[in-house]
Amino acid sequence: MMFMSSTVTALRQTFWITLIRQHVRKHFKYCVICRKLEGAAYRGPDPAPLPKLRVQETPPFAATGVDFTGPLYVKSDNGEIKAYICLFTCPVTKAIHLEVVTSQT
Image (cartoon, rainbow, N blue to C red):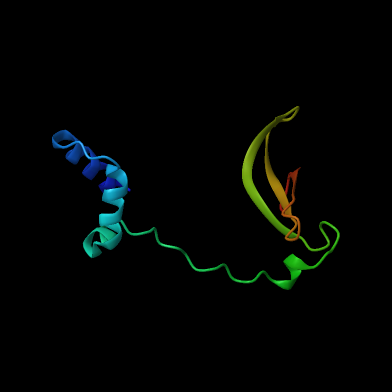
């Protein structure tokens, strides 16, 4: 409604019109050019249906995804060692479990 408020402001600088917002809104409603400029935002398509794995009732982590991040350098008694984060994800509950590991095996 940016154009409507600027139109109301411009009119009020010169004229005093009672119920000015309703009159301007009525004009914008029937003006084709104004409707194109003030048009509604794009509405995206409906999301695709979820896979069966995501909608079945199952216990958490019955199916898991595994991924590694890193390397990270962690201080220990022996000095600095290379470590990784093992990331377990549950597709049903979207839960995440993290563990620090020293190798990717």
